[in-house]
Length: 87
Image (cartoon, rainbow, N blue to C red; front, side):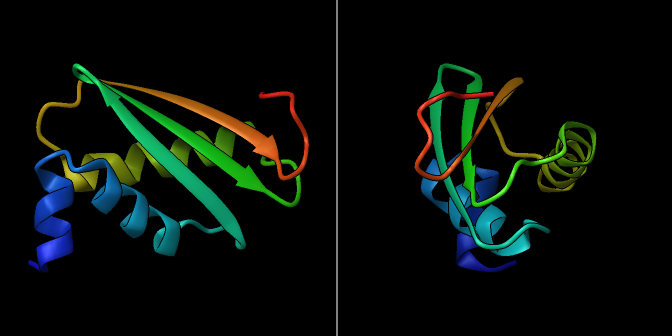
């Protein structure tokens, strides 16, 4: 296991962001993450609209494989780069 993956498994949001950014099927993408207690908030920014079902399915499978410690809930926010409305 790489050091980055180990940190991500421990709930390190910077490590989660770095790994997720490389694994995400839509590129280019900007991802930020923050942890509030056991609540992970992911903010995704892309050039085009993300399809909701495939995006959430990918994130669910990816997080289940990673199994980060201390994260019980995930909220996903997405927006098109340069826009101010979140979806």
